[in-house]
Amino acid sequence: MRAPTDRCAPAPGFSVLELLITVAIILTLVALATPHFLAAQRSAYDTSAAAFLRTLHSAEETYRVSSKQYTSQFSGLGLFGNNRRARLGDGPLAPVAMILIAPVPRILALQAAASSPGGCTDAAPGTCDVLISNGYIFTLTSTSIERWSCVAEPVMDRTTSRFYYTDNTGVIRAARGRYADENSPPLP
Image (cartoon, rainbow, N blue to C red; front, side):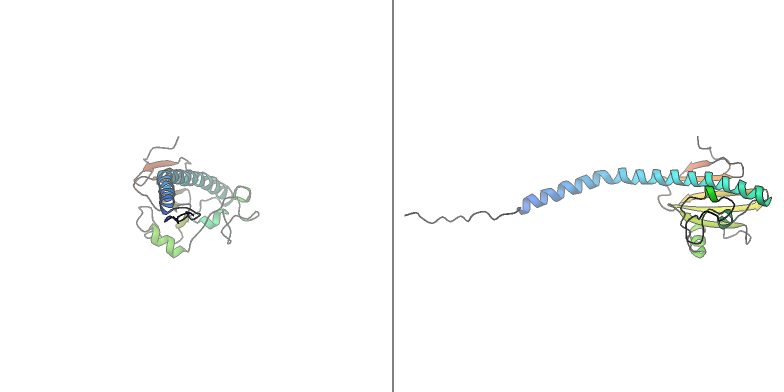
């Protein structure tokens, strides 16, 4: 006759140690990937901001040809409709207007841009407009019918992100970690 054993048969499944090792490996991979993901996201926001400023310049020039002056309102450029996206047939720039922009209520945009040197808080009514899109605050200002400028400042990570500036000359200028202006170096 066989003597009974004191050991139980192992239960099916994973042990706690195996689960802890798996979680540790996953957390390590996440920790390694996060900085690269954030850098790629920041690069995408920078590229998107520069592309928007190029589109803005084209829109302003098209508006000037048809109206004999520049505008200081994003809504007057036909870049987007009331539904937060461009619609063909709206505005003077309908074919170029296929860009998605997310406007926010004006009061929130003004509060967000209050700290910027090109902010609208001190501007005369109708000479300035603010738009927040893709991680940037765009402030469009018109000082006369022959001159306009736009400043793009990052919403987050203001110490390492690029600030952009463009005006009626069409040259996009950038500065890292500080506000860009007409004296900043141009983008290549």
